[in-house]
Image (cartoon, rainbow, N blue to C red; front, top):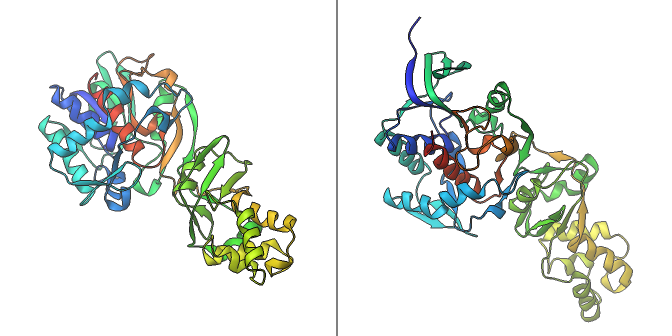
Length: 395
């Protein structure tokens, strides 16, 4: 049997957090190996942001993250900020721009960010093992031994940076949770996040003709709201506002949607009734909404077509469909289209400063595999950079 390859640090997963951790550890003089099951590293970076990688957000704060322990992310985010990552991007002369709401994208391809991380790893002598499948992991007196289809590798420290089950076509899975459970760490039950919501058949029958219609909204659920665009789909609802609120939605909850933010639709309809009494309701609503959406709401309003024939009570009911549309989704589209995963390794098991497991010296977890999930807009990449940096300084 071949003797194992020996390193100071073995990292499972060559995504954003794993590459960041490897580069930082390598720069400290640690010998580092990355085991990546896919043929190419960082596939999620490659496809992100429409191929341009929304690599961080100027406005990153701990308030942009969900976790059972909302304080856990504070140390890492302050130890390696969005401005630190921007400085790294500028050092590598990668051109970028702010799109909206502090979201930073590459001017060119997301491959530039991947190349930057690989260059940082190469400078630190990091060895990448792509297309490598893991069969077992064991802990001994001399560290951790990872048995793969290409032989065994041993490291004093083992870093789990395998992400969550979101977007399985990229090779993601719940493997990191199995490693955590093998060593006795608790898992916060994972579920899909930043994911489109789906309708039941009744609701779909009413809204199917709206697929492709986009509208600015304020979407609310469980005390949280987002003011962004919403998109009707063949399955239900998507768009930034819906992806954001999906992280706060639970099965059976209602979502309230204002499709004319800042407009008192009841007052607007009364004004139109006074000034243009012969106008049809659908035409009146088209002043405020896309035509297909206005027609659907007019049809749902029932009763008279002409606005002059509608009493206040009926106008109020129509206005509520615009300003306070309450909808109960059937579910989500699941991990297939989810951008990230909520839940994961319980933060109570980890040091917020080093990301080492409290009960298992030498075992670290970084990135999406942990129960810390960012909002849409570059925050999850920043979490990968910040957590990867913290662990890289301590492995």
